[in-house]
Amino acid sequence: MDGALAFVISPIPLLKRPVKQSKSLHGNSVYIQLYTQRVFFPGVRNKSHIKKISPLNTFAQLDQFHEECGVVGIWGIESASKYAFYGLHALQHRGQEGAGIATVSDGKLHEYKNLGLVTEVFNEDILSELRGSAAIGHNRYSTSGEKNVRNVQPFTVELSGIQVSIAHNGNLTNANKLRRHLELRGSIFNTSSDTEVILHLMATSLLASSSFIGKNSYEPLIQRVSDALSRVEGAYSVLLLSPSCLVAVRDPLGFRPLVMGKMKNRMESIIFASETCVFDLIGAEFVREVDPGEMIVVSKDGLHSFFPFPSQRRKACIFEHIYFARPTSIVFGRSVYMSRFRFGEILAEKAPAEADIVIPVPESGIPAALGYSAASGIPYQPGIMRSHYVGRTFIQPTQDIRDLSVRLKLSAVRSIIANKRLVVVDDSIVRGTTSRKLVRMLRETGAKEVHVRIACPPIIGSCYYGVDTPNTKELISHNMNEEEIRQYIDADSLAFLPLDQLHHFLGEESSSFCDACFSGNYPIRPLPSEDTTQEDNIHPKVFQQ
Ligand SMILES: O=P(O)(O)OC[C@H]1O[C@H](OP(=O)(O)OP(=O)(O)O)[C@H](O)[C@@H]1O
Ligand SMILES: NC(=O)CC[C@H](N)C(=O)O
Image (cartoon, rainbow, N blue to C red; front, side, top):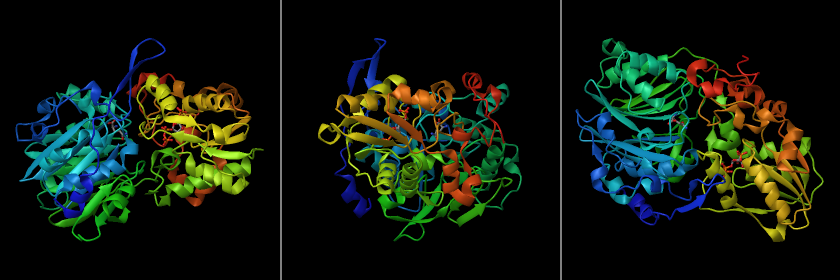
């Protein structure tokens, strides 16, 4: 094991944390997610769970896991699984439901994955068994398919003698149609995830034997990947690992981020990650973005870049800057922290409030609250504290858990709040769960006035490209106007970042960002049959081009 990494890995507490059980409003049992989801699928963390995938060892054997979206890829570094582990740790905010790592050694793939946070899924023994100098890893936050162990990635299969493992961040808008088509032709799916469609398209690709990029050992795989991805629509930042190569590929519109770096002291190493925060943690340096529509193949022959798909106008997800990405990251060439700070400054200019203090809704509201305070001159005070033992609430899978999580996660500091007029700044209102509970909590703590400022425009439409807001019924801004929301959350005043101000902030790059959730202008129309629950609820402005 790498010396520096060995020093760091030991102190990380890979603990099994206790789980509390409580009653929901409907009297059903609800498991509160503190730092574990393993309670649903208690399993054994021992070496026997490391899978060596032999030629006959395909999806069927993945069922043997009884427990189990940010992506990370490592090439050319011994103990790659440990770097992947730290990479996934840095990307934990992108998915809390499950995590997995696949590696290559002795010409074979090995993998481990499970439900739970990264530190719950992996321990030192498991990582040591995942040998090899190449790895891919995945943190899951489900957008297609249930939250269950089968859907935890990477998915590892064998395609006509080629072993391959896939990790996908994004959401495919034509997955159901492709799946039905594949099933009619005899494909048997093992998961309910959209990602598996890519593997079946690779398996059934007719291009696999034709020439594409020359006679390299990875050529057949690349042919299959290009063919498969040319048939899917929607968002994908995908990593694929096989014994001969590591492949990174991004959809032509570049919805989700994917960046490339290298270790400072290992020139031959390559690292791919959803966000640059991975590089900061493991001591790597940023090289460049994987471009929209680009496929990068890393093998013993070096690094090759291809553009197999027709180029299209870029549509990077602006919600990455508003909520999803970590503030320390540079995403789509911009600092996430600085975007959020500026959103706060703009809010202060466009929606001033007479108040004594500005308080943030932690975590994601903090940079915008600092921006609001800086621009307004109203002092910033951390009047709401968050528990470090509860994860992100918006990406929790059920409303019961989200309701409980808000109360568990946020508490008001009476000595800061009592008898004060507050400006409360959050990054977004999605379902309204947080704001409503928070305003009530602040009033109970003695706040004189509560003025809520939201550092993004109202979210009026579902996202089909990887953010889990599938049904407009759940989106408060789809169903209520600003005044109705103000009344619902019981604030003294409420203001959102105006959409035209967001466009102004993005400047000339404005048209290269997807703002469909705010504007209804969807760059790719999801097929009506994709999800009937969505179809019934699509916002009238949806699908304007
Ligand atoms: O209107 P809602 O449905 O409640 O969703 C919006 C809230 O969810 C997010 O917090 P979250 O706890 O997920 O993440 P954070 O810790 O990064 O702020 C976001 O920052 C808002 O506070
Ligand atoms: N958040 C994601 O990128 C999810 C990946 C994939 N669509 C899944 O649901 O597993």
